[in-house]
Length: 142
Length: 229
Image 1 (cartoon, rainbow over the protein chains, first blue to last red):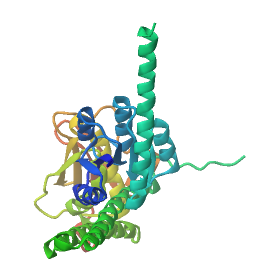
Image 2: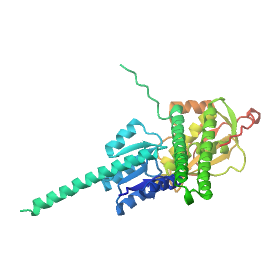
Image 3: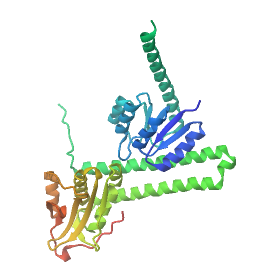
Image 4: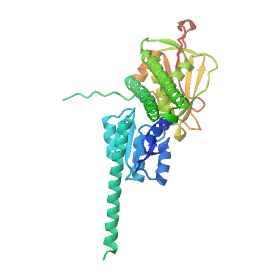
């Protein structure tokens, strides 16, 4: 089954080319040019991974990361950045980023990270479902 | 015990670092697009057939060309900025030099969703200054003004050729005024302004706040240096 990815970057030409290449590798790609737009999309749709630029106008990567994790904690976010300092990387990982990749990124490496993110998300969703089932059984099982 | 050296927030080195970091980030974006475009050409050539049409190749080549042009413009600006420390003084047109500073910080302004409007002077107003210190002072004034321009983050810059000397004014738009914050209020800025013969003009509701160059006699100005942002 193909990975469903939300690609977020304020550079429209980057979105065009990157999404075309990802689609050629079997991924289903939706694009957003801002964090606000991305937040509106994830409200309606589910994704295996979000690949997001770390520095965008209005809401930067860190703020966007916090907002997405608050809205959908199970979502896996891979941050793309021009330059990642160790401090920023650690901070982003603490907030819940799945991974980091520096621009220009190697698409094969990114595809690998997206696959891993999808597997991670499936585990989280399975755990959540199990928890829900346990809760239902405890309430109504006897 | 190790001595920790810190850079004060208003230092020139700090300003240079901020501008350089933003420019390199922008160039990384250009490189990312060039990289993916090259990858796309590779993908298309492997797919062959109708995907690898001359129109498609031309479209991707144009994308690459546009990004190279963008990166080249950024590098030219950065080169000009780096050389601004080469000469202690040069005579520049006030509006052109201010435009150059805004070009240097364009990515920072975009990220902040800020809009700076330059009201044209309508004529050349020469100022003799150290271009690096000029850029640093103007950028600090822009940052202070934007900080006081509310959520709109809109401000204007206007120029004046007064009897006392050339002046540049910074004012927040949309009815905002400057709070108690005094721009450029540091020992280092005071030293630079003294060296550049600049007097800080406190905020007033009509003009905003500004910088006034004490007027040298016309023969004290050198020939105007052309700035190509």
